[in-house]
Length: 161
Image 1 (tube, rainbow, N blue to C red):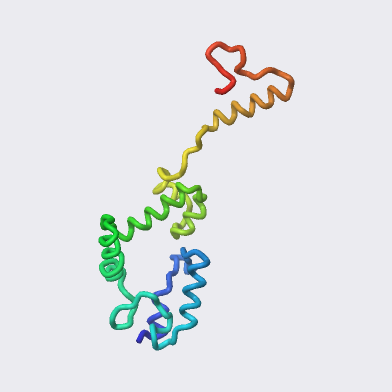
Image 2 (image 1 turned 180 degrees about the vertical axis):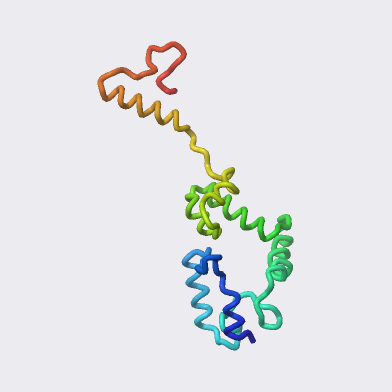
């Protein structure tokens, strides 16, 4: 059985000493309920979900070899490294429109610049650039002041540009 001192060494702390959690609130509540229902002698003081045969926390490599890799093989998905999962997590969040600050915090980066440097490729590109938005703004101002659409009557331009 793991002692409370051993358990303390498995807390997920950031370099600045703050704890973090990447779990959705619902899953976190379920895990807390499981911990509360468990006896200390059943899975140790932290009531960990993944334990070794000796009742100790599993090493990441064992968790991959005995958990993730067999599940991937069963699902006929190519084997990936743990860090590939982290990268996919971040890239998918950004592609789904989650803001860069939230993703940076979830990854535990010291600052947003680190996240931008690594994941700039995953940040969705706006459909219309800043210049298109400025043109639309100028057209709105022009029309508000009683003028015609800026592009109307100009050869090669249409109102849809």
